[in-house]
Length: 137
Image (tube, rainbow, N blue to C red; front, side, top):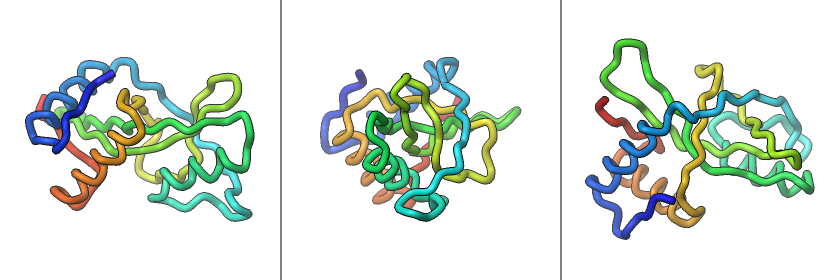
């Protein structure tokens, strides 16, 4: 598991991004399942709550924080967008959040604990106003 030392620095973020990029070949292409959460369709751009609320309502499921991996053809950048998905009782990953611009959905688990992931997301929003970061490849 990757370790973070707080406060997070740009150097740590770069090392973590390089770690993710080195493991991008292990990304799973997830299926999207349209589900009701608390009686309503899952909301776009609300993946962390969607997955957690779905798990609350569906015993035997877990959630997994991680990253959608986005690499444009011919682009010198790899982008990682924070994302949370669901794992069913058989260990299958799937996505309950509508993501209209990305299909298939290459997903890498965060490989850090939940608190570190939350701190990292806070850092990204504080420094970039986004939960997406890029690495030059």
